[in-house]
Amino acid sequence: MKNIKLNPHLLTVPLYVGGKPIELVQEEYGLTDVVKLGSNENPLGPSPLAVAAFQDALQNAHRYPGVADKRLRQKLAAFYNARDGATFDENNFLTGNGLGDVLRMIAHAFLFEGGEAIYCDPTFPLYPIFTKMFGAVAVAVPHANFRYNLRAIADAISERTRVVFICNPNNPTGTIVTRDQVAAFMRRVPESVVVVFDESYCHFVPDSDFSNSIDYVRNGRDNVLVLRGFSKIYGMANLRIGYAIGTRAMIEYLAHAQIVFNTGDPTLYAAAAALDDAAHVQATRQLIAREREFVQRGFAELDLNYVPSQTNFVLLTDLPRDVQAINAGMLRRGVIVRPMGGFGMPDAIRVTLGTREQNEKMLHALREILKQ
Image (cartoon, rainbow, N blue to C red; front, top):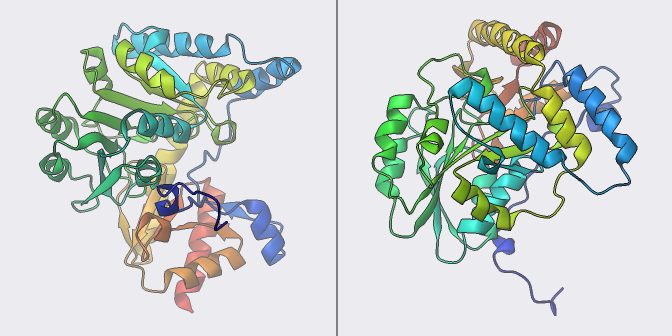
């Protein structure tokens, strides 16, 4: 393509590589029984209410999306008003084709030429990817004992800073920043800097000190966006639906970066139905809490270093064997985990929490590999 003018920003962007699919492992290794514990998916699957709503909406698949987006945003407003005492309406919410789409909108809206985005490394790779894609500068601040270092981020803010990404709980470490830490940080943030709280895993957090960043939106902070979605606790990763919460002024501006018809009605109706299934959410929370304790105890018995998690995954660090060798051994045994090289941690593996049977298979495979 030597005669074609290329976007120089895209040439700096690495491709995001997702977790290995079950079907590929089955084909490559000739296996039938494969457990996927690499992409932080819900082991209980989606709510039956969501499945039914999705299937019902398919009869209108020949139509362009209609009112489903507005209905979901209205339902989200009612959900948070009842739970948090907010006074939101549908104009406080913006939906996207997964949170990746919402992150792209944010980067498009704020990270144009000359701007900077700050985040704590290691974290979700899409923050620097989208930052560089739109011609801005990605500023990585080292973590503090696997936790987001908000003090160091505040110190790094300059007149060029446009956005700060805070992944809370953080992926891939599974740690949180507390309410008091966030409050101290926000006192140092200029009004010109947009603070993005990515709370994809917030539903799993047992710690009562977890920050409720939505309070900043409730109190009218135009420079705060809270991101949540339906992939994790609601088990709808394949349907791609995430959303941003912000002041009406912020959401109205951000909507200019939204692609028309970015999410179809079946997905939107499924998400709205999932909000009604409190029993499914509670069952997922209980399973994750139980299996998190079981898996972390299993790692301790294997004398492995892990980061105590507040999410549906656990990060193994400083592994005694080569990560690629361990990963290959796990795949041969029909267990998919996630090496963290793509997150800048070549000596780490992230393990999603599954059912007890799945977790036992994972621990058994790991035990066999480490004995070799």
